[in-house]
Image (cartoon, rainbow, N blue to C red):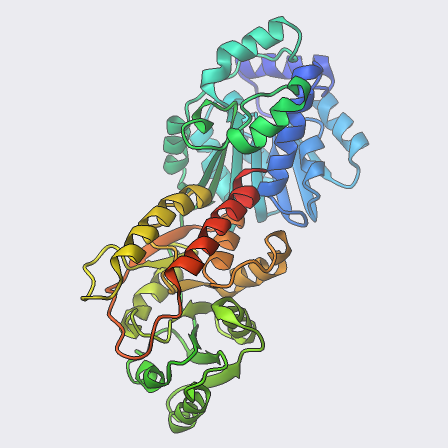
Length: 478
């Protein structure tokens, strides 16, 4: 290791004296640590390649059940303890802020974890810049730390013997962390705050921490803050192919127009009509259009086995073969001519999930009924909170993401289950669970020229309320 500063040497001496047992102290640490490990396990799925900077004795890293796990710590005694406890993991003795230490690590990793040690670093943005060398574009960096508002409480807990004593660290405000991550070319895609009561309190704390602590206006008071970031990287010359899925039910009059108005974009295109057992001859029209335009378009026609747009989306995406998956509603209220703009957002790396919004530009007359508009704005606020991203129009049918990200979403779908008849929220919640970069792109929403809407304001409004509660339990009440 390089020569340590006086401050860092004091931290090392403290770690050596405690032999890696950094979670002594009983009541405070026991409840706090169980909650922290559970939430870190929610943020980081098992079976990933994980690097932890400042791993201590490796308990957190082991709890994540990585396919390949590497921990770095500068305390020889602590590293020896970690190797004894978790022989299935790799542990490296070294200073995580020393570029030479990180240069000796084989990457890239799916996740880089910095838990409770970021306040001990002496050059945070410099260390983060070095960490980028171990990151792929899909890598996520997870930083967890104590809120600076809790510094007096934590000091009191140490004096009372409820929490193990530790050397002086920097309690840094979240806004400063965001700035430091920006300097190192990382952008935050998730910001969570947890643990309002870090002791058991006769079982009451579990209820409060699960259901009350994550609520807006209350979460700012929580002990723990979690930031999930991704490397900022542009790909101006990257070329992706596109699969355009068009779910259709009783939309016979729009099928040929969807092809006639479809622009050419991407390195290759395929169009998949997934027909939902229509009563107006839509399936036959899809087959006719496929045959008429087979020389200029790669068109597939599929028939749904189940019901609802969600079932159609799952069937179509399972059959898609190209890089970028796109949904175009068959009512053509979202103009097909706008699809290249959505494709470019993914292709250039600006985002990993694109959600259309109809509520930015003026709409054509009767494109959306007033009651639908009001409900859309209310639900947009709720869902923005749930997925940590500003969303103004969750029910816009246009959704775009990479096929490889969708395949991960599909493999991990058991976490949410088959809950979504619309097809929109299965994708939005799955993208949020994966910590994908979500961005909204506005469209010029048009009035229908054929057919009738498939959505009932009152029946589906009740379903949306149920979905808000479902998402709260799955994404917040962890």
